Every structure is written in C-alpha cells, then in structure tokens.
Length: 208
Image 1 (tube, one colour):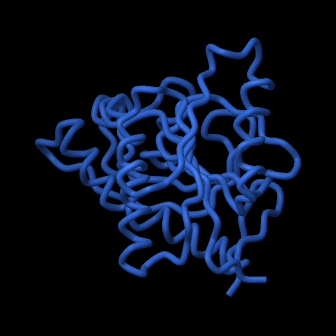
Image 2 (cartoon, rainbow, N blue to C red):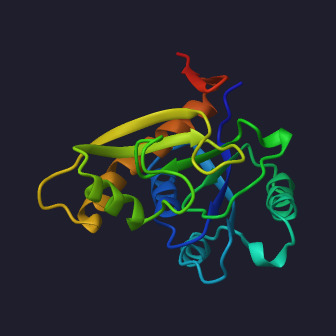
C-alpha cells in the first residue's frame, strides 16, 4: 500500500543540509512526507536549529551515554517506534547502528560517493571528496542505500554520477555532489513510499 504521507524520522550529527533539503522538498510539494522527529547524536548539531525553526520535535541521543552500540541503537529506534515512523532516514548521521528486525528495509542512508568506492568507517564529509581527488578518479557521485550493521554496506537503491573536473577542490566537488544528493534521496523516499522497492539479497529491484 502506498504511504501518503510518508512518516519520516531523520537522524543527524551535523549541520543538517540534507534535513533542510527534505523540509524544502516537502514544502514545495515535491515530496509527500511528514518529518515526525529529528534525532541528533550531538547536542551541538546545527541541524537541531533547522528542525526547531520548522517546528519539528527533536531528541538528542549521544553514543557516549551508552555502554554498547546495541543499547545506543535500541534507544534510537525506541524513539522511532514511539512516533510510528514508516522510514528512518540517516542524514549525515555518523554513528554506527544495529538495525532491529522491524526496521530492516526501513532505514536508509545517503553517501557522497559511488559505493563501494570511498566509503566505510572514516569516510564522511570533505574526507570523501579529498580521497576522490587524491586518487584521481574521473567521476564520483552519491549513493542511496538501505542500512545494515556496517558502514555504507547495505543494498544500493540508486546512484547519481558526477564528473570530477580539473581545478576541483574538496569543497567545489562536495557542492556538485550535493546537488545530486538533493534529488537522489527524495527520489528514493518517493520510491519507498510508492511500494516500488524490493530487496533481493544485495540487489534492490525498482518495480513500476
């Protein structure tokens, strides 16, 4: 059954640029969704103010307050259950999560490179784009994927390709990739809400 509107919980750790994109896409009618809750792993995350300005409830769940990743993850997903979210969207969330059974296939992330390249623990923010430039690749991009218990390893939903140009800096390249992220992530959310995504092992089939 289509989910209308899609009930989202958004997880952040930093500035909230992806969260802002979701809010703008919803406001413009390009994404039929409602953000029920924003959960931050840091009390100083700039995205918390973005959420407050949009009158979205927030929770802070810090990894240091828990003995294990399992306990940390349990608290995060308890909040997601409390608000009855359809989907959990990681948006610059930098902490490892253990995905419970009831949120398998209901937790997404976006990574600013073409997985399996330039991904995994430690690859986030400008570090990703610096690594791309250092390696000398001709293309990069972004990847939306379902989340499993490892960094950037879940089944891939869709990818967008971005050229690497002469004279690029990490900042310039990041901005070009983010333009595609702003389209790719909402597209993946729409496909999920339509019931168009089927996970078959490591593959995600998009059904019309």
